[in-house]
Picture 1 (cartoon, rainbow, N blue to C red):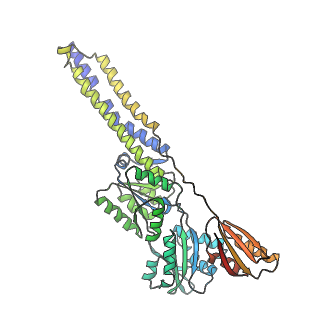
Picture 2: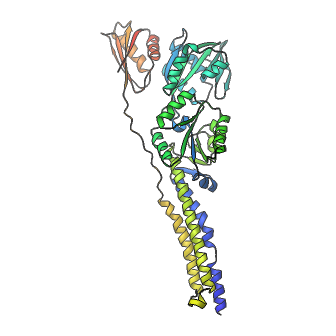
Picture 3: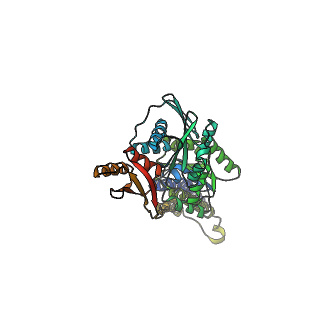
Length: 453
């Protein structure tokens, strides 16, 4: 009878229920908590791998920045007016799906110019565009692409460098081998990027920026958000090679991106994270999808992974500890020395308690709190310029100039007939060429533009 009781107690208490529940319950609660925080984790492997990351690689456009570039400067090299130049540049870009193309199309719309028909269009990935307007061949892209196509950019090289050093992307355009000018495009850094990157660095992670943009622009953006290591001017396949290079140095890499050109790098990385507002290809290639368009979700995902792994280890320890202590007691190892024995009913109760303990410990993950986005307050000052205008003789003229300048988005305009001037205020700087172009398009001559400090 005693032998039967000992045997039943051993069978009951050695049931590995707690051991079987230790991992899946923690993973289930962890992925559920991630979903509540806007972090969709595709697999348990991804949840486990992200906690071991040592390096976080960030794409620039749409990840660190808003991904909504805007035209800031128009620099004309030849005899074209800014309006004529923008018409040609925007027409060429109209066949492209790149975010920078949308910026030019938006500027063309603001300036009220119509697009021209483009034929024989082709795009060179990571470099530029080609197309014909009438009988003329138009080329648009970076300075290196201009050099490859035999276009001399020396006339505006210094201006291009100045724009790049200020964090803007200079796009060069040429017609039949002759340089037409530069359109500078800038993308605003997300308000929460700086704080999110500082959190990652505080966690002991190396943060790297990876972008196809030119070196100076990339370095200017990286400096603004506190990143010291930058891979710039890289093509899509070179992004994948950069990830491989980091991994060969022993790094466990998390790649965060949102574009088609980020897909190879997302697949190559130990864990790929895609911004939820990104392209379908990037989302499909990623292991983790960040539904909130915010880098704070990256640190939250890593912390959630670490919390989940800690819970799994706690559960496994309890399950093994329970069996290690309970089985000898149920088998009667201590009966002869101390008279200790385990009634099968208490063995069943202990077995149930171990399962309840594991599940309850896993449910503690529901109390996990991720990082909240921290936006850095930026005091915006209005840029102000005063234009001296010839040809205004009546209030009708004032109305025409006022309408022309207010056609530029985000401007406050005050036209004074007596002084023959117009004061233009804007949240973002507007180039002199744009201001001069819209006034001259209205039929008046701008003799001077003065910036008010």
